[in-house]
Amino acid sequence: MTTDIAKEVIAFMEKYNRHFEALSAFVSEKRAKVIADELTWLLDSLTVEQKFIMEGNDLEAKRLALFEKLGLAGKKARELVDECPPELKNKLLLECSAMEKYVETIKSTNADIIEIIERKLSVQEKLINRTHSTSSTYTGKGVKVTKHNTSGGFFGNV
Image (cartoon, rainbow, N blue to C red; front, side, top):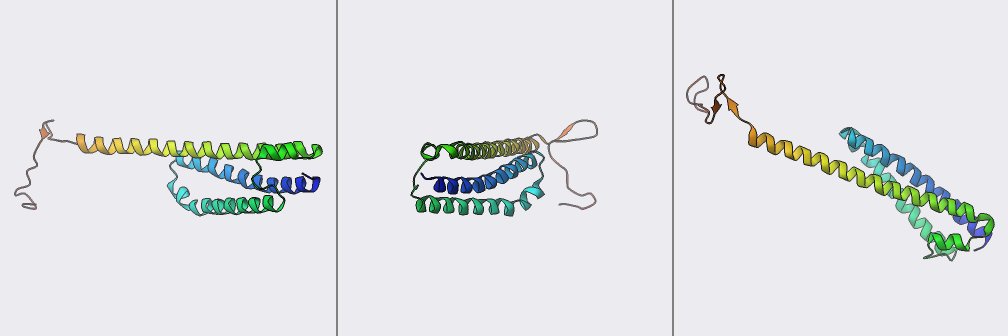
């Protein structure tokens, strides 16, 4: 790999990492909002999340096209670092490591979000089932009412 090609790859990786950094911050904020049950924020954030997804897809398409143009199609990050000129090797390694860290953080945070939501839904389901199965009516003397007497009275038969 030439110095010019390495510089072009590094410049693109820096841009890609800015995207992943912003996405990581967004997903972290989303996790906090899920924990806090801020449903309005979560609903409003869907367009922001869709924007991140579209930007990520666009960047990946550009990366594939760039790597194809530079003759690097199918190369893994480790291979790129190994082939990089010595004076730029550390910079490329830093960018690749940063991207790997961002991707792992995003995956982990998304898994946490799913787990938190599943736990919250499970608790809600248990509360709903318990409420329906254990709700009872008692008289003023503490005797459980098994049948309501709706005959006569103010409204008549209902």
